[in-house]
Image 1 (spheres, rainbow, N blue to C red):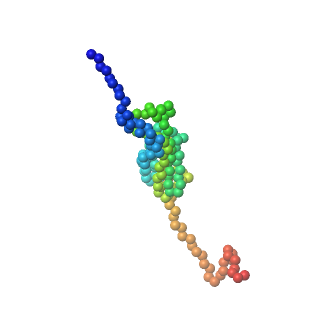
Image 2 (tube, rainbow, N blue to C red):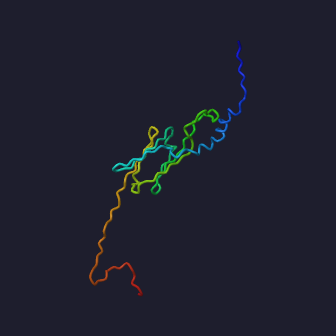
Image 3 (cartoon, helix red, strand yellow):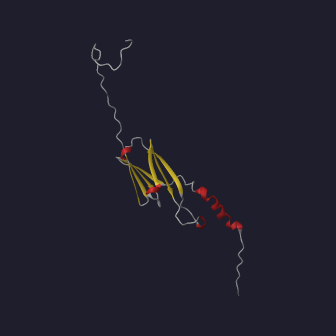
Length: 156
């Protein structure tokens, strides 16, 4: 008994894969809003931000504070040597990403610290002391002009 297998070309069976490959370059820019996953903590003296960035390197990350916004940016690069046509399943996204978080208004920007270890970026944002209102006593002397007036006399 012999078994013969007749393989016929089935273009509709291959269509979803080919369409997926066609739009793959556009997927790079479509990283979902939740990347990277971020936790934001409030302690007595600091705000702490932790971002999960598996597979990334420190040199692929950028961190900045502008006004009351903390911005994390980076690029997760495709593994070298992996050809696009060899990918059969891709759940991890690659490409440029950016996340901006609103910050509480009292941050001591000069003391912000950040480090990256085991795929987790940790940012320590020290709380700045709030400005206190200082009352200024206004001095008056009865019936005397100040000895040194900063304004030139009018009409003179």
